[in-house]
Length: 324
Length: 258
Ligand SMILES: Cc1cc2nc3c(=O)[nH]c(=O)nc-3n(C[C@H](O)[C@H](O)[C@H](O)COP(=O)(O)OP(=O)(O)OC[C@H]3O[C@@H](n4cnc5c(N)ncnc54)[C@H](O)[C@@H]3O)c2cc1C
Ligand SMILES: Nc1ncnc2c1ncn2[C@@H]1O[C@H](COP(=O)(O)O)[C@@H](O)[C@H]1O
Image 1 (cartoon, each protein chain N blue to C red):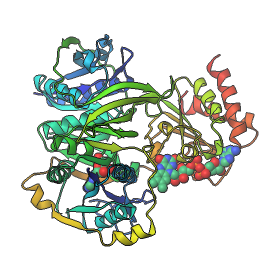
Image 2 (cartoon, rainbow over the protein chains, first blue to last red):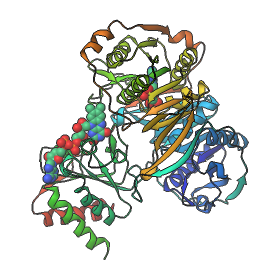
Image 3 (cartoon, rainbow over the protein chains, first blue to last red):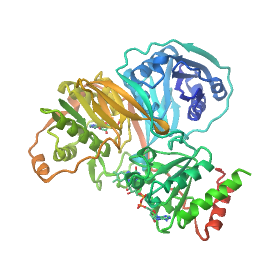
Image 4 (tube, each protein chain N blue to C red):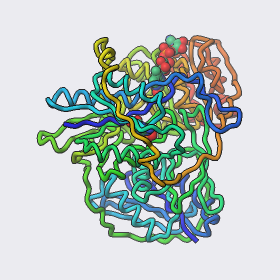
């Protein structure tokens, strides 16, 4: 009997939605190992509200609060994950494919010298070992992989697994962990852009392409995004390269991979490298004046027309229906 | 300074991926091979660092079959000095194995700093940096958008983008492994003299099988698949107010996403 350790993430004292997704999936798999789900949260000294994790099948929450760990640190965090995985008898360690998880989980696996896969869109356990499916070639193909090591580490792509309630009695413990020697240290957090949602996390992404023609015109997309609460603004590489918006917003093969429930592409032609980053969106809407634009072949709903007319009309219409 | 660059040859991002008839992998015949786009940022950053530190050299390290030497030559044409190719022909190898053989070269060469891409755009593995760094007992940061060598020459300050427009400003000890992200720099084009010289620069070959020893696979491939094609949806045009109304109706009543 072994357990599944999930690395839960948090912001402003609240657990992230993708960590609930991970908890739900882990709770479904844990019986196959004869064990349960243990969640680990690492952070600074301010409190994190972990109670909700119990709703999604987590039986034990381990919280490490240490001012030295206020910011993510690959040495310190990975040491703690390895230590906790051992003390909690975990054979499967799961994180989310986020900026933190994508760095922390492979570091943990490398320390343990065990198998690892990033960004899985399907996870299962067969004969006591993890088997996964993940996109490769930016989603142009899928690969199925089987783990061969005693301990197995993987990250799951956000928005790939549904949150499912399965209440258990949650035990919460605080751990005073030793982060050890930290050779790379965050000196400060710089705010490049305040308060805007991140494309890789948002449920709805509104993206603009070269057709937006200026930084100023991107405001139109922000207005639409703000009406669709929590939506993030994305962009094609052409828009980023032209300087209309920063690279943080680029969606595609050399940008971010997004997996929202709704993706609205405005004035984006649909080049293969762009499609690579957004093809798994549940619903794709395209607005383009060229009826032959390749993006239409991927769109669930396409509007042939001028985005400078369509987008403001859409914002107005949504304001009415969503706020009635 | 002795500057290492980990460089991978990958299919061009335009490539249409086809699976082999027996499903055992992808069809490689019609592929155009290029330097992994992120590795170009790594080469550029290495060259910039060499320019600022007289007497430095830039060494390209790649693990791959014979064709991979071409990618090293492309880095030579940009200005890199010499190369090491670990020949993986006929060797069944996974992430751990590749990281192990790369780290053996990293340790042998005693690099002062190692630049790599944040991700290879073929298997999108996004873990090589962390594995190579750990197996070489070096610290790492990835992805890196800004790099500055410390005045002491033994440390660096880098910037790493995290969620929602936030950047971590990180101090790191050298030697270290850094994963390069778009935005770090603008890779230079190969110059004509560069291309001429590239032919004469040395690539030392090593054998993956020897470096790997008896190391087994930690993760094995069970199969490949192509993603399901999306059914083509509706496409409409007309007056903005009319089409928008239809869209909103679709999103609320059919797709139920808002
Ligand atoms: C190695 C490599 C990596 C790459 N990585 C990425 C990546 O990560 N992400 C990415 O996006 N691209 C990437 N690209 C670039 C990609 O190939 C395309 O060049 C890019 O996506 C084009 O952006 P676009 O659609 O905004 O511009 P365009 O292709 O110029 O398309 C603009 C579209 O806007 C439409 N339009 C114009 N005016 C209007 C209007 N008033 N109303 C409505 N529609 C209008 C046009 O019909 C056209 O379809 C990469 C390329 C390479 C070689
Ligand atoms: N076979 C390889 N040979 C040399 N460098 C590699 C190899 N595979 C990956 N890398 C390096 O590691 C980076 C990250 O790749 P990955 O983690 O595999 O997505 C790449 O951008 C390269 O710099």
